[in-house]
Image (tube, rainbow, N blue to C red; front, side):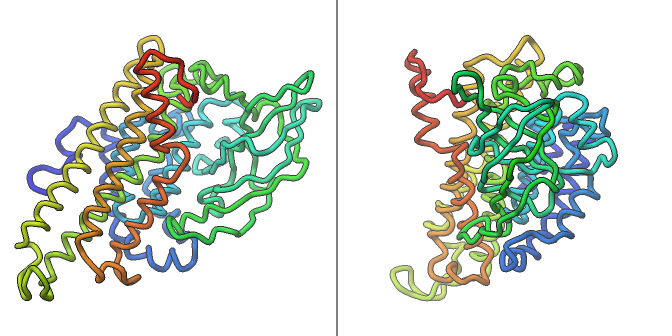
Length: 404
């Protein structure tokens, strides 16, 4: 990269600039730990401690709970830096920051439960409503099994989705805030990508959840969740959850592409061709095919960042001026899914060019390649589902999928 670094070219908030710089300094350390973390299927406790010490987890935590109270564009800048170092670490970071945003939507009593005694408390989540909650006096009894709870070994709370039983057999999707002691972790995360994210299952068996630790999906989608009134100075808590949920998935994938680019440059700078059609002995950087792929990959990385930052800024602007429109919400989902898609394409373009040498587990590039595809497999940025929804909206039709 030539010219000023990205974070120096824009008027970032001082807290965001400090966080981005801390993340950039931490990235090489995370990369050095990545192989061992993968073998353990869990990022190091030291990595979580390093991110906590740098204040990175507090990026979107409300200022009244000693957070920096920043928004989506700030998060993207920081998550990219971490993803370039260790994809699994960035994936966990994304999960934690998303949850600190969500906790800010809960009633005051719930926020006090989490951050009242320890401002550094962090939470994981699984929002799919695969469990059932039964209303009882003062709250609910919650039972079920949930998969893909990233970073659950390192977090003290989890936000859990369920279907709440109602009158006449009706079911309503809700989310609950549950402390670590109330669920059991099932160590079943044996996968090919994002291995160190430790995205294991959790099980709850007839656990009581107080009323104040429960929100309906309708509330978090309305822009008028209880936390919006508690933190009126920050419009981020008035943004509908599903309109911006994908930002937290997409940004680590964008960071993975940046990390893959660094690996690719290292590899082609040190290698010469072995023969074949290109002729032996030529430096890889001198090959036109390599140069073409490098330019294509860089352009996709730049396009993903520009698309995501534009979407993030536009969303906060609308939230500050009356509410986020359906058009912007749809635009967000399109931007999130497509930015992840072209980031993965950038990784593929580079990985295909390094040949058999890139297959060795000792090479970091293969990990970025696997992790990029694993991240893009998340249901929240599924390109087929999202583009159909967006296309229907663009054609003036009611989207069959209301995932915005």
